[in-house]
Image 1 (cartoon, helix red, strand yellow):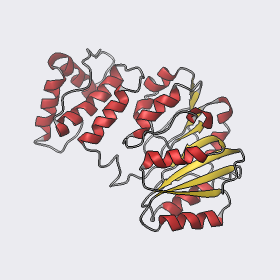
Image 2 (cartoon, rainbow, N blue to C red):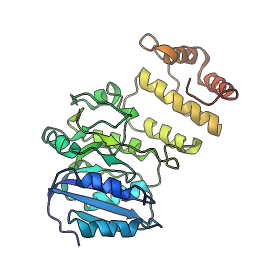
Image 3 (tube, rainbow, N blue to C red):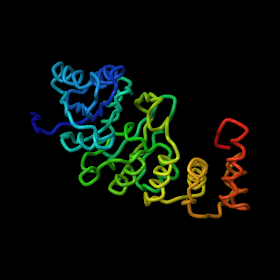
Image 4 (cartoon, helix red, strand yellow):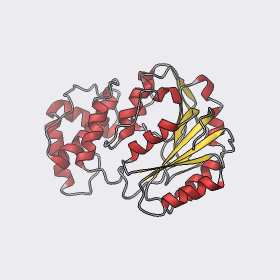
Length: 297
């Protein structure tokens, strides 16, 4: 039974088919040198030895509790953890990833003045020390739409009062972060700490097909966040991939893009987009991919 006593930090770790990496993940969390925390392992109906491994970890460390549930996917697992979390703050770790020692301690020192603090991801995302009270500025100037990851952030738990991850959706973090930002008064990025992300070769990101990318584009277009020219060109890339892989009608609204502040290939693409339209750009991209390995030109 979970004793519902408030604490500083709740760490939610969804678990599914990760026998090879679960121990490394949990060890890195327990090495964070924080006693006032709970680690919630959510066994999402894993059919391997993970349920037993979770129970063994709970026996070893009183800060660990386990939820065993039927398989419902990543969003459902995170939501199950949120439902029982007791911490003033919440964070997530994917069970094939791990953390640098001292990361949470450094970030928690910043949380008193913030609702969310975002920290670096090894070899993937470097961040400067900066604070935002305007969420549109964070989204556009900070290009937050390119790193909506759930797991490299610590959140004030009250943000999740009426927010949950969408069950059955891929790229669930793109749907959810804008909802949290609408309730956020201050968010900071920091150069402190480090999250180590392991690309799963059979995971959502690595195997995203046209159907999944359609959900990604939909998540961006329904987020309610503002779209500037640079963000729009980012969405053009997703739309091109969706069109090429599915043949679906275009869902990205037409827009005349100002090209003066764009550079390199992005500027060339924007000029062609303005002249020819996205239908023709998609056809050109498909033609190029017939003769070379696919890449975003």
